[in-house]
Length: 179
Image (cartoon, rainbow, N blue to C red):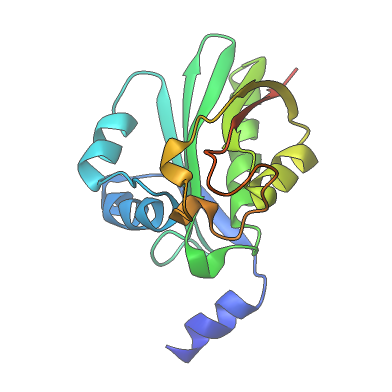
């Protein structure tokens, strides 16, 4: 058990692969720990088997053990959308989200998708930094979109805030040109 904490403390490489049925429970636990209204394994199963959807999971290097994070992406023609991306709390800041997004972008480029969109809370400083580093740019805003994040919901924890914390954060719509 001590090796697990050492691994989380260091910043190892992660291995990204296709999400499978055996990953759904761990994915649901990660989502629940990351958002005020987490999705259960059944919901994730239905999403993964919906048209145009793919899911990726990140594990420690070598691909063993439970997922450390996951991303769900829906692709339709020349456009795709990140439906959700989440990292286990103990694995945050270790490059898991970056590895997941890098692989999702590679797959979409391989499939000749031209643009990738996502929505992110204006208070999620870590995610905003990652998306900007990947080349995403803000193309829109949905004011007060995340009403469930008011009063310190899980997704608001650790985020910086521009508006007062009692006001619902806006969703920033971001786009990445994959061409």
